[in-house]
Amino acid sequence: MVFRQWTYGEKQQALRSATSWRRAPTGELQPDVDPWVLNDLMLAATVVEWDLVDEAGKPLPVTVEAMRGIRPPELVEEMIAHTHGLNGVGVEARKK
Image (cartoon, rainbow, N blue to C red; front, side, top):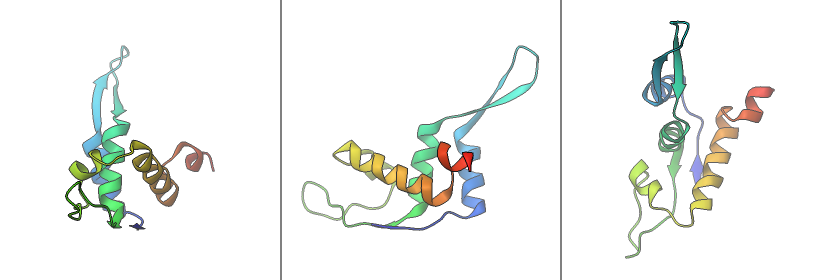
């Protein structure tokens, strides 16, 4: 698999798409980021190529839909962890 860092614009678009706003009891609007949506968008933006194939042996496109069908799920979790580190968006990366 080949990964790349995402651009500032890709990061902003992913955050916009993964964020909804809710009103707090104080009346302030607060962001609510859906981590699953953010992970999907981040993977789609940063995975450049892979050699994964479907059950018929045909190459899978690098899309969110294809990623959702990958087995075992742990492979996608490893991809997410790698992408978090590469792009500095994981909890540990933000602590640094």
